[in-house]
Length: 610
Image 1 (cartoon, one colour):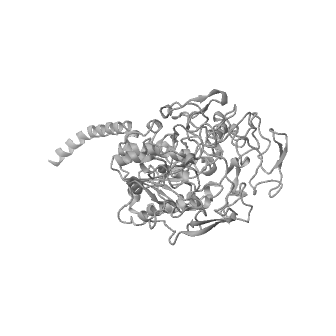
Image 2: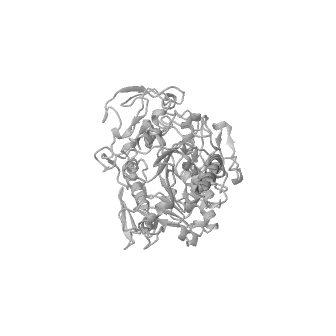
Image 3: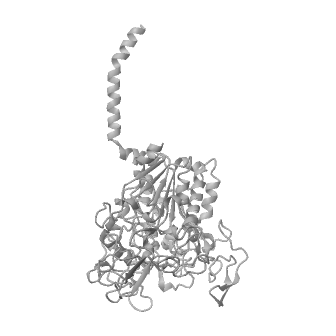
């Protein structure tokens, strides 16, 4: 009896093995996409941490396994002047990098725009910035002031801050130079600082993700800022995948905010660039007839470098709705926008979400809410730059802007143009001046970062986070050159990740960390739409490659590298696909989402280490 059963089982064994093999083949061939969708569907929470102003090579270019600085072609590292000639040196204006003081002169060059001579410590090549301005350097400014060329060590605060670098819409397109990546220095007010980079492996985020028992994470090394230019525009693209439109924007007088570009598409001159005609660098594109319906294919001006023209807000523009920069006239504040946002899509699907901003309770006058620090106001405040100017309706917190009208107590480093949803009608304060009552959607969804931190800390046994959380750190903690420290901001980022990792949320949360834009810093990889990188593109971008990492369970290794082409709109595309939401615009409908990280592999060297 047992022998018979044994024979029957043995006779069935080849058939079962063949069937199993066929099933494995079907599963393998059916699948990278199916596996990606399956793993994405398991995520119940999404956290997006939106840092500030660094290119990929500038921060992550030394991470193992990535397409980093060592892989850059020489042609993409050498910077050229506006006539196409290689610069002899990298002149500097940051007070800690100039030659012959405080650094020695190792190179001499001639400015091609006026024939003047200059000295530099830096040859025409990328250089490690923190060799000269380490995190221990006292070069960070008082938050109430904005020195043009940085603070000479040791006269500032510790942190290793540099001066800021220009990062604007028309300038970046000139800097990319059709994908040659060779005019970052020429089209910058910071000159050779554009070629500086940080020692990746000394960053707090790198050390955190290389400690024992670190969470599984992916580096996305082909991730680009969605739109050319700066923070204002890319924050708009993060939530709405489009450029704001200003209906009937003035085209003359003091309130005309349109730019004027020269024949090269540049709106201004710099020490190494001389404009070829009349120019004006302002908030809007060049003036020409336009309508919101032309967003997919906006008009162009062939006489001025074939640049986009019309009534599009591309550089920093203040919102109509409070909070806005104190004293900005209504006529110079962008009318509220009615385009759909990812917030609208989530709300319609009854999916809980919030935008958590550092300093929001103070800036929006949310008295008593998490993050509020201005009890006892109003008080009389004095302008630290001019003691003859006082504000009797000021805010008690000494870190508040001196001219902030209580209770709108914005921190000195609170950035009004980073608050994406405040620009949209559904979330803006009511009234023609943007100072009226707050709609319920605003109260529900625009919250302070301290509230998110509290939710994460109280999630030890059960995750209390909303399904989607956008986190915008306050200026001092967002890594922005000029006013913030990379080391301090990266440490704050680590604290946010630790809070999630220590909570019950870690088992089903995807955390996306990226930067709004390049901050004026060079990168060697050409964006889609330039010369040799594939991926969706249009008149608005994408722009320079930026750092991006994803922390998530379900990855194929403790550390993987995703070489898929993405841009910022891939973030909302991921959310749309997970919750089966309609795209908000055209780019997010076309990009690859971040589920691609679930098919990425560990770099060979990392895998060999175990």
